[in-house]
Amino acid sequence: MSQSAAIHNNIRRLRFEQAEMTQQALAERVGVTRQTVNAIELGKYSPSLEVAFRIAAVFAKPLEDVFQYRSDAMSRNESA
Amino acid sequence: MSFREKSAWITFVLLLGFGIYFGEVLNHWLNPGEPHTNHLQLFLLLVVAIVILEIVTHTMMAIRSPEDAKAPFDERERLIALRATRPAFFVLLVGAFLSIGTMHLGANTFMLAHCVLLAIWIAELTRFGTQIYYYRRGA
Image (tube, rainbow over all chains, first blue to last red; front, side, top):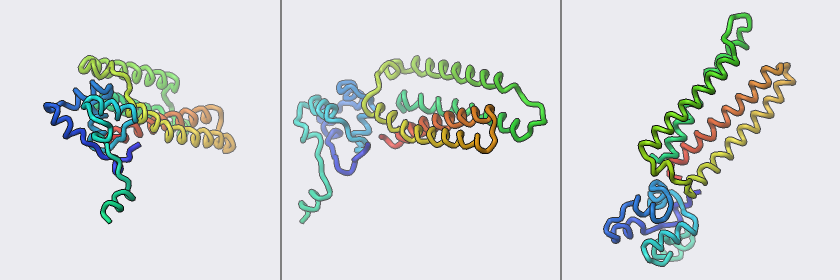
């Protein structure tokens, strides 16, 4: 359920840039609970593609600006 | 704490109350000569009490936060519910096989029925306990 180590997100920063949008407001626009937004933001839960796209659409950003995938192999390559 | 997590907590705690029934049955089984309460009466009393308390507590929660109560399950909540079903099913399966095993140990129909009931009870506790665990963990 949670692949928190690999998938990172900028939701907190993007909410801040959107006039401090609350988690509740984002949750209502995406169609999930506030607790789910919180779990996604903290990296405890990786959302489905559909919810990920909906979150990106709320911020009017491409998906990769909101979520980033970093596997161990990628991190090793970058540090080498 | 979300509406669904509170609901899981309430159901888990209320289900624990059903342990009174199994305690009484065990007491009767270990001390057959002693007077005991009517099992059917106690069973029905506990079932009715649990149902009433479920309705009352959930109604109170819904009045306090109607939006949360009306909201459909989101994907994380559905996933938690599904994940909690898996260990509960395993517990139920093991309990069912162990119940069958009691027949070979000389258990009568009464005991067999209660072993199955016990397996269902533990499986339900496992289901709601697992849900609480995932809600506490975040997902």
